[in-house]
Length: 241
Image 1 (cartoon, one colour):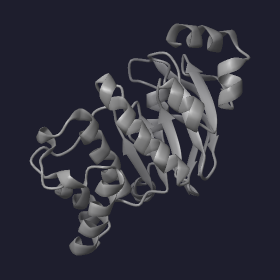
Image 2 (cartoon, rainbow, N blue to C red):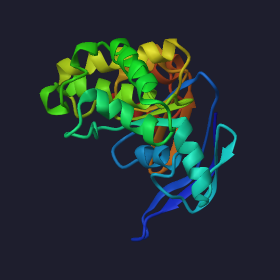
Image 3 (cartoon, helix red, strand yellow):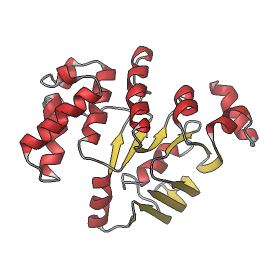
């Protein structure tokens, strides 16, 4: 589903953010990317749908090679859903309107059909009763579940999560992780940047550790958490464990 090879990125100030990063994500896999702040993990997954550009290397998503061609970028974005740290919901639209806006405008689907799907998705993430409310009337955990449902409403083939629980109060984290675990059980291909160790242990197909813009280690969760090969991995785990 995702094939990244030799991805390099420099910012205009000369900072070398990504240093030849490779990653392969197969259909149905859940790949968790971890690493210290500033390691390049969020920058890296944002290159998958051209939210960040890169200067060298190649990225192919679901058979589409990422380039400067706007049509290719749009094609990839139609297949890739993304959930951010902040919920990025439109505050002036109801929950239901937030879910239906893009499928109607971008995919040109019938509003009645999209509304039926949106209500089903809200039920799936446990907040069907909030459909007519505005984002400001919801808790942080509820807003993040709306953001997940909104991405699913576009029927993506891949879901990217960029630290989806880091802005939440601790008691709200689990409700969001449970939705993500259910998606994984249903076979959704997912790339998740997170520090949630329990989620990574339970759900990840593989764990990738990034540091200083590079992949330091890549291993199944059991190996990564019990017997990491690299000293940088051991150091990171000792700091967050």
